[in-house]
Length: 354
View 1 (cartoon, helix red, strand yellow):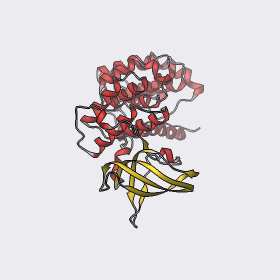
View 2 (cartoon, rainbow, N blue to C red):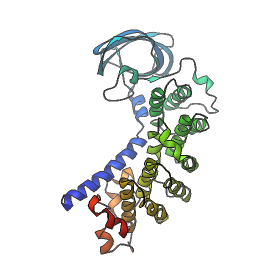
View 3 (tube, helix red, strand yellow):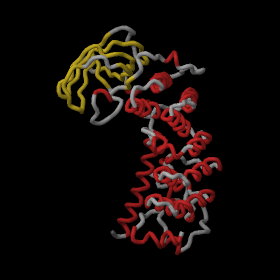
View 4 (cartoon, helix red, strand yellow):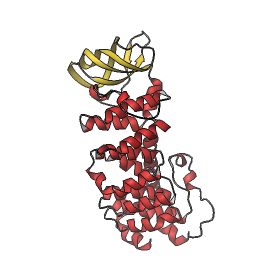
């Protein structure tokens, strides 16, 4: 692989990492709510799927958005990407609907791609309404109402697949004072899955104390069925406060390489002077990707490059030094991975240098 190709691969790795952070920050549920002409909680009374075509009658229990009426039944059609055949009956949840040009209703699936009907809406708990949630705050927006519905259902999930789908929707809803209250409620749950989900939401809201709590219990993350949520939150941290750096540093001592690796990605992109001891410890990780992230962090530091954020990648601002780089030299340039990937055959000499 020539030097130009190595640089391109290195740039692509950084762009991919930033894209993952963007995904964590993308308010997909908000966008869906904006597109929908109506959002309702209701139950399928009857219907049929034939190949990709679905048609069903939906009885409305609660209207979150739109001019539909509680207790009425509407007809909904949808062309699914997932083939299937059979009757539809009894599915209960939150549905995002759009009016067609001829005045009929079609379904806006909550997940994109090739998904079955059961993953096209948020399955809720019919026996537990938002009135039982107990929040002290009142929803002030459509997104708040959606978040209350999802949080209520999450606390009464039937299986982990349902909980994961609900969490996916909740974490992609825009932040608000009510959202923080909901996340705090979940973070105090005795159910470890719910506890980490709440902490994940708080970390995404830049609550350093939640990251400290995750760090304190980091070795439990690999055993979670929904471990991707806290791991993604860890990777997306870009706060350089002492509390945050200390929490990330604590995770570098985790027995889990996936926790180490997630902390390494955050420390790599922050790469301030205060991160260097933790990055140094990660050079001894048993995971090659984690060691490479540590070398990249040192490289970005000595070149005095700014904290890498999703916004700085497209603009190339991450490649512009913040000022003089007194630690940079021809030798550090020789072993820099700021824009290159590591050749495994040369890893030993890179590790020795840094």
